[in-house]
Length: 115
Image 1: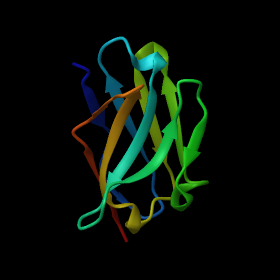
Image 2 (image 1 turned 180 degrees about the horizontal axis):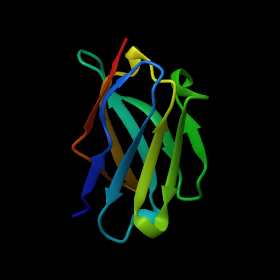
Image 3 (image 1 turned 180 degrees about the vertical axis):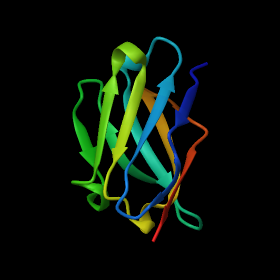
């Protein structure tokens, strides 16, 4: 059973930065695609950023130019660097691992941006 553990969330003022981390157990990480999603209260979960096993990235329009996703296969870790944070970025952030038909989610980490 693959486990994902997110960390790095917290409370930050608008304009500030946070870096989220997600560590994936097991041996599939280097072959897997990874994604960061978020769910604000009352809203559906949405894709924020994704990175393939080959390190191709894509971003939601709302975070382009502010967020950067990266991965370290030696550490089984995917990161989300979030800069110029806005109150509308407030949400629970989840990471997801996908390999062929298999996927699994982390437990989420809260990000709160105050105005």
